[in-house]
Length: 450
Image (tube, rainbow, N blue to C red; front, side, top):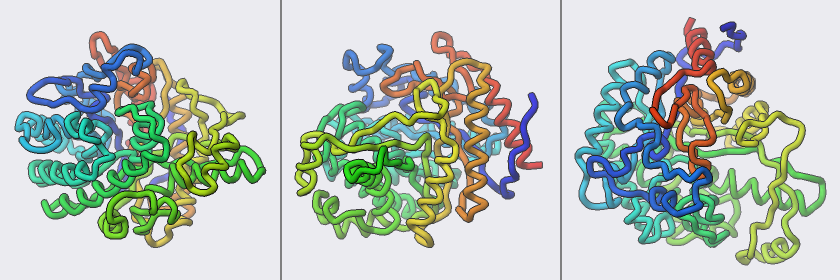
């Protein structure tokens, strides 16, 4: 395979791949694991488009050594996986499941034996069901239980794990899980879901402190970011785009990096002693993770929603409308392929936060395409790496890149229909077959070290 020459990335740039527990591990009831909110959600008829339930994943729990060998063959410097909270603490609080910790202990050992940096994410959406039934992220106590769990994992793995991620994509949990009801736990609360955002942020800050108390260092968070483009020049279009930009980007990044919400109206809607919480939420990070897939085109909301939102009452529907972006190729998921959006987003972050922005990692970037011969995935990754390099040449401090994902996996409400992996998974046999993009990425990594 001929590999086009990419621009040169700096020495020490970290190349990796990602995965999450619920999407890959399977073994949903094995060895003392408790149920998660996603287990309960996926079991409800009609929630998952292809009728799956995620209980098998990709068999990673039994086949992790095979996947670590694939990472080693790739030449990956790091593997971003997630620890399943209900596998370690089945009820979210109380008794610790030794067998669950033993699994992650074996995984970390195997990664280290292959010279691959373990980079665990402590929360990738699988809230213990017992906590979800008590309110989940709407309940302040969940943040404290998460910090307890973070300390437990750090005490066991901290001697070998040099890089930690607290929470993955709190915006998606808030918006898709609590505001719109598309993901677990399936609540449709619209702006009443804002406490879920605040409590995740608080959980992050408490977890950073718990990790450091256990001797861990090099701690970050993985936050989704999307450039927001107005659908038109009208005042209503600009209002919708600005509001969506605030909710999807700055509602999470601002508290983390500045210690304040982007608008006092949002701060007023948050629960608890907000000022004191923000001091915890903004505990300094060692790095900040960016998950990027595509820009979002946003236009005017329904007029009645705009009227109700003008006084910052809770509207009866979301006061913005997401539009289709035309003129770009699309992935099998229907997402527009806009490599320069990554550069655009990184420049926005640098401009907004300046010296307050810690070093960055791209913690997710990838695409869904079918087939083991996958030239469109190669083109997608090539374009985004070039865009990333351009942003770095313009002064953005990015230290590494994790593609999503190592293998195909259970893609939440899409089930097994969307394939993001560098490695194809036959879901009947769980056989792994490296795709052309796997071999391409291997050569990219190899070339960066020469």
